[in-house]
Length: 145
Image (cartoon, rainbow, N blue to C red):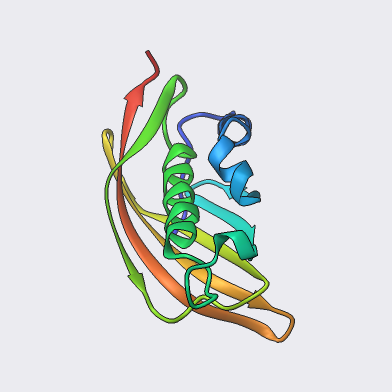
């Protein structure tokens, strides 16, 4: 799907916003790809982010998927706008066991106010990647106060 950004400076806006996300920094997450309507956010497995069985906690998977969907929407928002998630659903498809994880988000439909995006979260290993979660998200664009 080809998207046309409303703001020619969308990449700088996304990168500056991501740099202010202290929670993403706490997770060790990095912004790996920025394109119109598409974002990839990567995070490492960290023992302090594991749940009781040693898998990466669903909260981490959900957080990187949510941010990826939001930033995918932001790439298409007009200058002077910001975005917030209004709703999302995540399906946890298998235990998250890998050294690294990536959430790849894509805008499915961008409206003037609401944007629908999806993110797939993959566990990354040397031998390949495995889908561990999938998110659908609705994001609202709003003028920055």
